[in-house]
Length: 558
Image 1 (cartoon, rainbow, N blue to C red):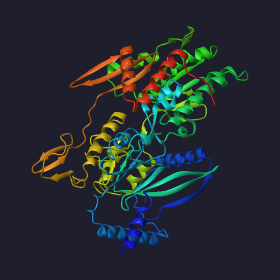
Image 2 (image 1 turned 120 degrees about the horizontal axis):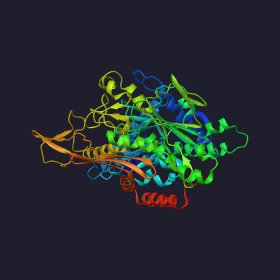
Image 3 (image 1 turned 180 degrees about the horizontal axis):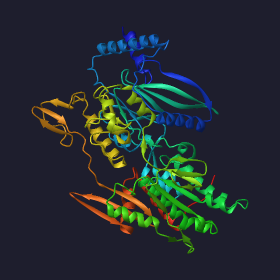
Image 4 (image 1 turned 180 degrees about the vertical axis):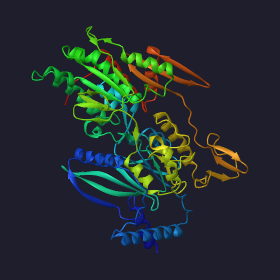
């Protein structure tokens, strides 16, 4: 009997941590270099995100090994129960498998606060780092280095596991997440597809850039969402000046090579224009003195205003600062940004941005920084939930996952599927900002930590009777303790506009503090430095700012 006990418990202990309930892994017939395969997954997901969606139902898998796998799983489950019955000790409190999709602001805040209560937390993301996205524009021109604004996911929580993969679907019926990972053996790489089981899953994958179906955007434009985008922009900027230096170019070709177009006058587009002009005035003037006078920056905005989230007086200040001419370090004249409001882009070809009846805008490179679109796994999940509460909410959600006040996904089994950040939409919709995502992550961590005491599947997550568990997350309704819904605390917004000047709109209780210029820039830098996720990041970012001030930006290309 003791031998049987040892055999069963040993078999259970030797099982891998992530054992799926059905078929585990499929090696897709795609091979190549690691970078090429990662690009292949990204292109596939971008194509799915651009395609129209209709609600569908998922068929049951037809894996020929499914029965054997299921039989083996049931055998192990029986063995585990038998081992517990033979043990003299009380059975341990069951733990939950919480799978978090993403490694952005919401996911980082959530993961950092989970795992201490016995939950098994697994983070699934194609990138193994957290990225401080508000400083991507600076990274694109070399003001800060890429590694200064990233932090390894594995350092966020020692209790959490990490899987480097792209989630492609969430099967809410079988309670598994379908993933794709690039697996390399020597110099050969392939794409593996596998599944991860969950008790609760949190979808925090952010958003992709919305092309609004404009022809030519995916083929010809650059974006600014990831480190790879910033790297592509930095290389394109260096290439533009090196190409313009060639003696074989005509005057028209040189002017087009040095024409930089930015589409979208939100925070991303405006801050990149500010950083780009800083580069032109300080660094291009030093390294390319004969060319910098020909550089032109054009900002296109479909609406009649820039930085729509800011107060009207701050928007006017930003517009004036962008359009003003500047003197470079060698007293050369740097043209202001040509801001075109009400400019609706109809097409982007290899040389020009077309604006309907207006004159086309030539470009050396074009940055598309307008709007958010749904990531592939979000679109797949919305579609798989079929007709119901999720479909009814899509008039407002517009491709995002509609959630209730407790961030539970509508139409999914209540209490099992959550969404937060840019990929989620509540009522009323909240702005797609890092501030919202981080607060939602902290809130949801508090909610999930009480999962063993709350009924998260109830209409209002609650437990009957007893004292309040946490004043921040609970309130009393009759004889029940009910979790409070998420409430966003707007702390304000900041934006950099170039020349060591910024805009600040900060909430102080019922009043709002508005400031511009150097003082706002000092606040902008102070807040961004304080919000770095580690001391390492703070030291690196501060060092980059000092290096930029003393030595300028590095224009070396590899």
